[in-house]
Length: 467
Image 1: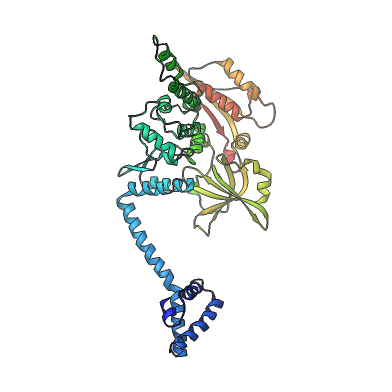
Image 2: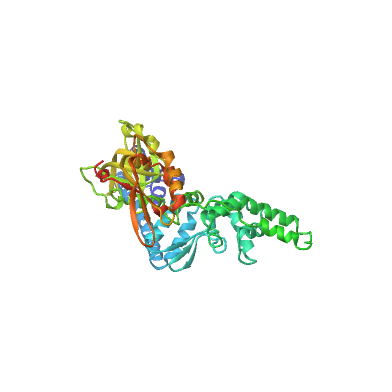
């Protein structure tokens, strides 16, 4: 710009226009600016040939000079960043997580990177967390309350202010001590779902069911502040009001689904772990072990994302699957999509049969789907038997009541095998053909609620390998 002003006679604004033209590599504008520069240089006593040569040198520098300056700046920044990450990992990751805490996708990316580098991420805690992510020691970072959806800066500041008087002992005390002008029911429920009360009460279902009661009790306590207690009746009534309500405990799946509502992703487990026990008997390829090949393979994962695209072949879907080992992009073309669209649900288990190809963009692998299967479809097609362990609960009448609604005279069905053992012996008893059942999810859930999840197992046929 200085050359354009001093030699070419440009104004400051005109020199900036020249800089933009060079930066954008606009050839038509560059040709126009060449004439303006040469004319101005000649007026200032520079020979035409030398002026054109100087302009060419400026244009040549513009082809790499600006990028070089950017590269130098970014190289320095990369060096400083790498140093901090190598020598002060917990502080570095805490700062980066705090910087993106309003963007769930970026928080998850940073969270996964922190774990991959050996950091421990402690869950949010109403007595230990700050608004931002903070380093606890060189290998540990505490999750920030501000990254819990539905809280906000004012609510978290009210929690921190209440903590100055001492640790909070439970949900009801929390609602009494925190300024309710800044904390509503939605924020309290989000904190429960995120696990911020786990250190005080691990049963999130009871806490969530009691949130409204705790808020009401806190409001009543405020109204009673000026009233005196007579013979302790008010204190006894208050103690009764501050008891947590009973609620059916969440299973692992519900716990993780509720947690994701509050955080945008899971930090206490992976949804795929809900199904791993059952899928262990199904021949499939873990996503981390996939390699390009000519033959179709069966994979399973949780649907993280499904985004539609239009192609010459029609509408297609790009599905991102994730098990606990890796992620995989699956391309679902219109023929398969139109027939099996209802099986594509975010956060649901999806099994895909298809061919694995090399992804030329990422250098990894991707899959072209031939078939999509949800868990119900897999059970209906491949389940060979339903194995039930009735250890210490030989209640035949109860078993009959649970099985009867799902008996299948025809259609997809599997045999029922009852495993029983006591202190002296054990045996497997295969029920007759009239007791074949549909392996419905409701039946399996009811059996698991009665006998515990580990005592109910779907056993798959080996034909699942070839499909």
